[in-house]
View 1 (cartoon, rainbow, N blue to C red):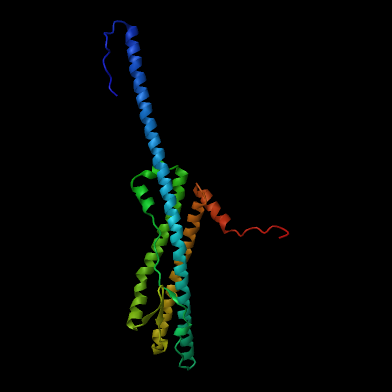
View 2 (cartoon, rainbow, N blue to C red):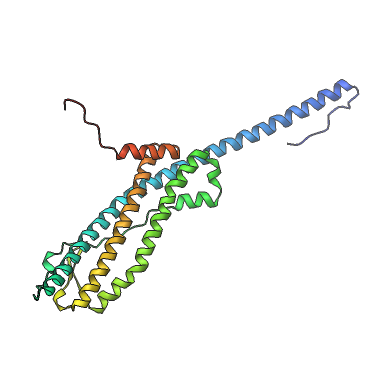
Length: 256
């Protein structure tokens, strides 16, 4: 806003105060308009951020549903394989030769896990947009995305330790045989392994089962928090309350 000199000379105090009042009123109106525009812009940014965070939560819920299916299938396959390995070890301990047990293995899901996204959250933190959210809402999202970090750490550890299993399987030259577009079965002739190799394999499979269970547990908790958020929770306290409510079985009414 520019302040101009009066068009006519000021001869009296009355003219001076009128001119000063006009300038002051103009400045106050200009400042008020600027603040209003900025406030409206912040409201728009906040609504846009909340919509993007919600969309990311929706996508992540779908991703985790598929991931949990992959993890459950892999755990079933790994558990069956370990049972076969242990059964052969037990048979050898009784002096029996044992039989090939490939046929007992279920089909293995060959789909790959997809890590849930945190792109919107990270961008909002790096650009200081989180300051636009109410504190209670920001804390709720912080809690949810903390579960993302926990899950990522568990998965990273599992993948890092997977080398031991891969090295063992490559050493004994197991063959993979495709049985369906998204399924594979491993042609395992366990009878060709020594008892020492079978014991080593059983230990590796047990460790993989433990890691798989950890990933499932962390992902389920993350999915539960994310689902509570999508149900309309607006604070961290309400988020946890909704998780508790969702975990409770439906009350059976008397007489039904």
